[in-house]
Length: 115
Image (cartoon, rainbow, N blue to C red; front, side, top):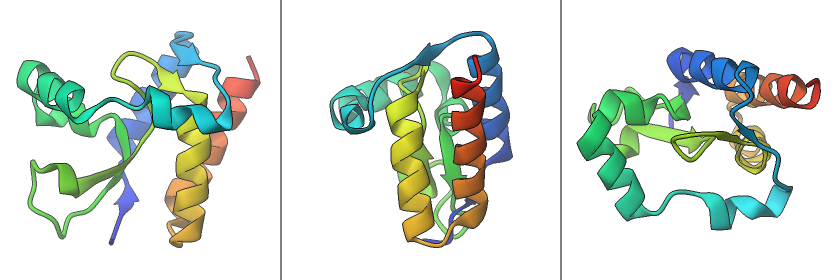
């Protein structure tokens, strides 16, 4: 995957955190808190793919634009930033060498934990 940092998503995540729209869950909660495929499809139907993409810190310009495969590293559930999602994506980004995404996730965690 040739994921790059989605700066629009990063800006949205920062704003949500500043507004207090944060779920302060623990590391392993993301598997239970992550939106289902049906929830993702419903969100896309209601809000469009651009808004869906803004919930993902990764984007892959090599994939077809407007497809779920073109975005990665979700950080929330379409209403709040989930701490568990950011922890999870930070680890996965580091594992796959996406340093810009890893660093952005780390800064989001610092912003969340600084409240």
